[in-house]
Image (tube, rainbow, N blue to C red; front, side, top):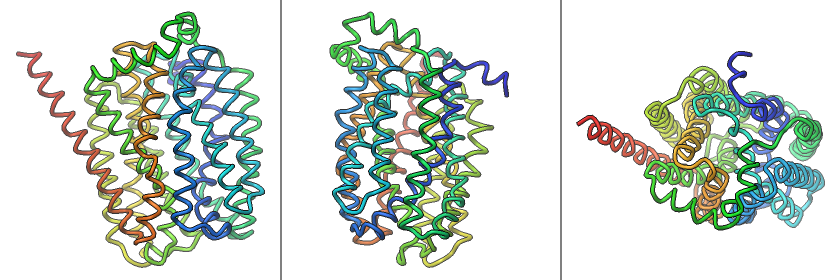
Length: 415
């Protein structure tokens, strides 16, 4: 293990080592917060969607600002400022939230965290060679998975203290866990060499750098395909809150709140095994594409199985969760590794800005998604899942088409 992690940069090791302090408690928060909003605060599914659309609206502008600030003033400085202030402030508001206005304020401040989405990824991969980046994303994916794996602990807290006080305790736990994480990162993170070079390049570090970055995106079919996949994944992520509601809804699976935690737990077991064993071994474009096709295929099958279930059929629900584990293992880690390596093959200076553009475009396209998802859920929980299935199948079709194009290109080069 020490030999494997010796192949990645210092910043990646710091971020990976401290990530559990965020991923474990925040996984609990993200899973139970929709139930808290629906049952405790009393918001309708449509109102929850409107709150999340407000959050998504900030993801349109903030990442572009973050890419500019990071290239102009340094990755570490911008990352630490926005990450610490926004997360701690929003969690403090969630602890005492009583009505829709508190929820709105918390979502707005939490949305400002998106300023550093691309900056975090730059710190994560810069100073690490391309062949070793799958180790980084595999580790991050595994850590996220551990957060879901510990979900029964959150379920126990909810059962012990009830949904109201239990979820507020989850907010407190997350707040307390983030403080040492920020202290450690402030002490040990370093500004990458590339970050220093881009800061000195006044043309590329300014807003003109976005024009150059857009020309890179338009000229590369693989980057365009991965952009579209990112947009489709944004729909799934924006609808995730309703998946937890689907588990407990009478027209969904009808599970109790504590038993529902077994679903992400099961997905996590499969995802963790793949993130630790398979993802770090992927190094080629063909390997990335094959892994993504497999993950999206099994993810589509999992959603189809959930749609077909009626009533409290826990064994089949657990089977669906296991299949979703394949999707979770590759949807983030493999696609991000693939995208970043593809960017670097053209111009590594464009990394921060292209990643910012990817977040912005996805957020812009998915701005109405939470509200739409809430409306579809109000019409019928299964209608929303059918829509999610359609987006997964569309992503799968794009990946298969990309595979075919790659094979044709290799054949032409051979001839």
